[in-house]
Image (cartoon, rainbow over all chains, first blue to last red):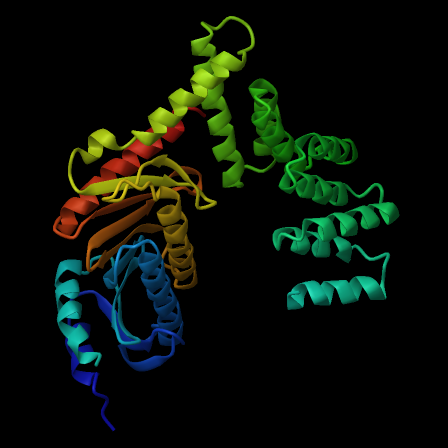
Amino acid sequence: MSSPFEDVLASLIRHRGVLGCLVVGEADGLVVDANVQVGVPEHVVAALAAALYRRARLASQAAGLGQVTFLQLEAEGGHICAVGREGLVIVTLAEPRAHIGLIRGAMLASVEALT
Amino acid sequence: MSDEIRRLSDELARDPSSLVFLQLGEALRKSGQLPLAHKVAVRGLERHAHNADAHDLLARIYVDRGDLEQAFDEWDMVVRLAPHHVGAQKGMGYVLYKQGKLEEAEAHLSAAASTDATDASISTALRMVRRLLRYARVAGNGTGAPGPAELEAAQRRVEEEAHFLFADVLGDGEQTALLVNSDGLVTAGAYVTGDGQDVAQEVGSQLSGVRDDAQRAVRHLDLGEWKTLLYETDVATVALAPTMDDSMVLVAASRSMPLGFVRRVLDRCVRRATMWLAEVG
């Protein structure tokens, strides 16, 4: 059975440096659908990215800064990006060399799929 | 009563001579039940009069009750029992700082820092004391130990310096920046809403939780140190980056400001914060 997110994930994974992309439940951090390279711990990425996105969303609301639309964590070894809507989050794990501007644009365009 | 406190209470009831009173007293203290925490600590000390951690627990309860002198006496007892007890050195430094005895505070905090160089809260406190001491000496023209007037002048100077730390980096744009320490407390910068309210502490403490989750994520995914965390909301762009002593810089800008520009402002604010923190070793 194909998932409604298959096309979105297939298009994101094609970007240079993307190691994996997932659709995750924001509240429970469980994988809804994923397209990841071999060796990427998808359940760990899902849980951690969902928790981070959720924390940022709640903190942002509490601080009066509105709804989070795009989140990017940059570390020495790579990037985690997330966009969310209606309890679901699209997460992308990428290498340091990835072009975040392009990935951001693609993720924001994909958020419509989370309905 | 939380499950943890109930479990520890049961354990202590089963074995009154157990050292579990230390955990129970700490749990009660953290939950704000100070009279109960005090009772548990004092009873524990009746059985373990020479236990340094028990005296340390009692000292922290006294601090929470606002009784700094009794806290100092307990910590004094701790260092007699365990001369290199970091918690006691740090606590005594804190009490002396609150009492305006900066030179003595510096000595205790230095001792704590040399025993535990990894505790960011000690190095942050030490920097603050050294900065105050330096400014107080300048205010008193370097003649003798600084008095109350010099300390007040130093305090004012530090507050002003901290408040305007990022002012020239930010200019007049719709952006603001904060320096938040490892405990989520704002140590520099300002965050004033459109209606003039200073909400720096609220924003800083809320967003420091995001930093904790970011650190957890990079640790579990072996991504090395985190460099920036940036997120866009429907009204603002928020960017965070680490600096010295486990502190972080937070920049919040209007959504109309391009992301790349926000990152540049963040980089400049991090450099400014690092320079400021490093001014006093």
